[in-house]
Length: 396
Image (cartoon, rainbow, N blue to C red; front, side, top):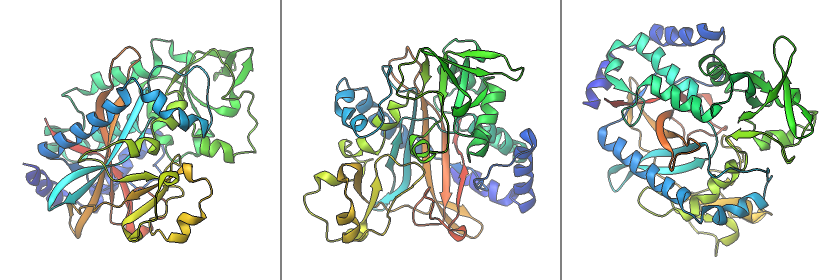
């Protein structure tokens, strides 16, 4: 069945349709994302969908374990620690490379993030693709048979937690300059919360305030956090009126501590068929002789920053803070998407939301990246090895 949809799509694809797709996205806010848009969705078979869900549930089982916080306290000691952490993460993104092992297609866990992804953009991207290819109505990017309105309801509840929309903000560093700002715009339009820069917040006692479009000072009761501390630490030019380490009277939709707890830090603890051999550098007994089969990664970087794909012995020896790096076995990404001029590799990010009172996260949607390069999603990919963002579609 999936090959049927691939053949249909490739037969209908034209450069004009691709441009029309981009123009349709740009028309919403008179803005086109700066990241590359993949020309096609990734059509996911029922078997691969089941594997992705099974692998995701195994990750979730570790995170749900009652000892998880104790297991990951070290991650906060190595980084920033923000007060008033909640019981569990609000957002969970689980990245699987679509690989080949012993001649069989299998998803392999590449990364886990306790941080928001493009939740609002992805569901709108689905609508844009359907505008160009009507047969895509037969498919869905949504998991567990939910429909679009239910998706928005779950997302809104997780972000707002029943607070008035004006008291909930999407917080980012200079949001208008971020590559992901298209997602902020859709969030503001579809959820109805304002977008606020970290420099615009004012602290009074334990409370935070921002000014609305009329210039009125509005109390912040809940923060949908999109701030990455990596970037914040580098931006010494920014003048903030508060510190994340302050004891604030505010709720977090995505408490910052979960960015560190649920990260590459937990990869060495995950064992099973969907997981890759991963070792914390500080616990490495000896440097492997076949380093060409490994990749060196910082634990807490974002978007592939600092990854060394072609590792040398000197690279490992040069790392001073070895507790902040992992050595991970490379996987064999399978070129699986049939394009008009060859096959393309894929990585699927399973997007979950964990509402405050729920006992477990809800698998909601997905994000897919397509690449012709050696490694997906890292900044050193050149134009010829393009990485394009798209979404995966399942049969209803």
